[in-house]
Length: 111
Length: 113
Image (cartoon, rainbow over the protein chains, first blue to last red):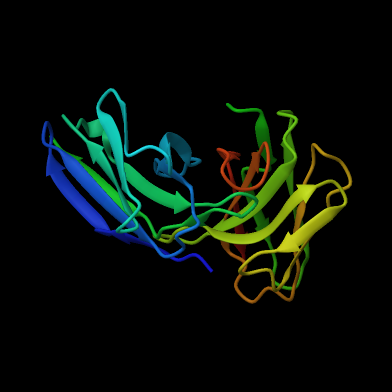
């Protein structure tokens, strides 16, 4: 079955700097890769996703890149702000299959 | 808030008691899911249902049971057989299984003493 690894487990950056979180997956058939943000005590919320027919997707300060050959995808946050502090989860899924989530990255943006 | 609700927000029970967590959605989604989250941990799948009257075990189903009698509802029962039930429980729904966004409920924090 699918296995998703995520690095780093914790990440601290200065406000205004960029943050990058990387995930690798094992099942080459996976074709959907969402990223969720979870603030303390709250529900995870989708912030961006990418499908296997696309190499990169951007939404304002957030971007995701996908390398299908290497089976990894990354979340890039530019110009970080204190409100970006949260736990970020990546996931991989295929048609008809459940999400397999990574273990999460705790991002702290220091003012 | 995405049309998926969970109740209650906090739940306290004595060891040995069964407890049922509610999950309701008005998004007309076919698929529904239950996840468990422990402090500092990721999301582990307990049960999922792709259609009414059908559900499947996830990675950590032991000690839990579910039902899916209505499309809108997917209650989770934490039984006394669950050895370490204290956790944050999240329900989610999606249009279908696989490559569709999952919408999460606000969660129920269960404490068993």
